[in-house]
Length: 208
Image 1 (cartoon, helix red, strand yellow):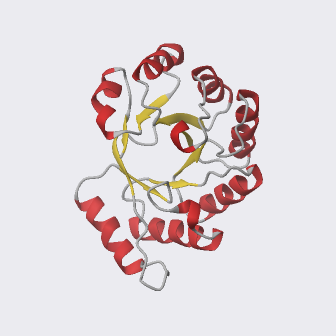
Image 2: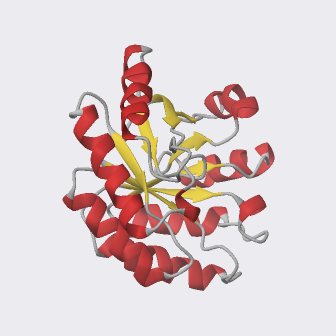
Image 3: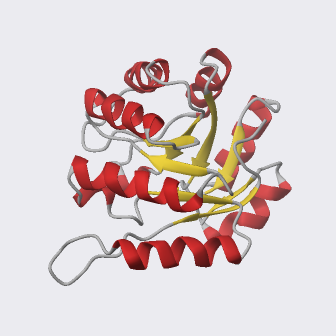
């Protein structure tokens, strides 16, 4: 079963003028999303400034959003890194503090091979029990693409890797993936302008 179907919102992380996280405003944002009918909340993704936060800030924000949400809808925590050990640490801690799923981005800067991507994602997945959505966004990872074959292999061979957020912008590639996956991969649009085409191909929704 999919972690969620429909629209998941990637939250911003609000900050005060002194650089501290504005938890009061963060709570308002979470409540606004839930009241608006959002199907899932994604915390500390690209939009949430995770790459510029300390590990302590990152995990504090994840924990706070899980607490405020209170299991009313799923909370998916962004815990990816170009360092496998760091991604394992963030993923394990996110699981401990109540996340319902994880969003793991393609390692950036390192320019992994497909074999390297397989190993990276497998090691992270084996360190936790939470369901994982891969995040395929070559525009922010030095052009590194998780190939459809790699996505299918991961979703079929690793029990808790369940899907992918596709922000490639390549509808032909998504169609190829859906054909190869034959229902084994939950696909979410990572671009708002491609929601309808991806849904028409059998996608589960959008991480917006």
